[in-house]
Image (cartoon, rainbow, N blue to C red; front, side, top):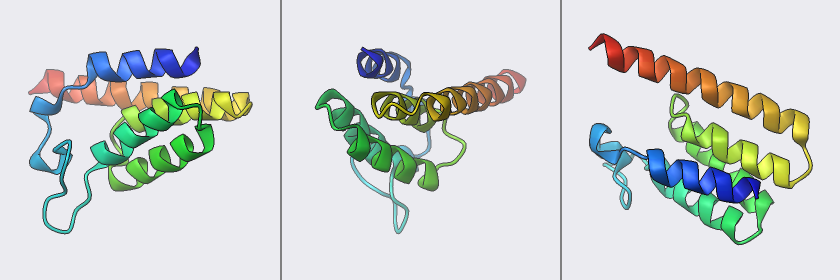
Length: 109
């Protein structure tokens, strides 16, 4: 259930048009790896009932783009599926904070 909610949120709120080319859904730019590749694979793992693999990819995506909030929500879903509820709650809080910062920054432009 948590994975389905995370999947729906991710798919409904993804706005690739506002991202730079580094967030192209299929390729990296130069030597930079796209966090979207890891995020999509993480989501696929969640939907395939492979939470550890999903968590690994969500963490990789966060390493590439630490200010992107989607990774935190994917981590939360994976952590919840692994029974790590306290860590999942912390990931949701982090994602909410990052999303709020992003929204405020977008509103100031």
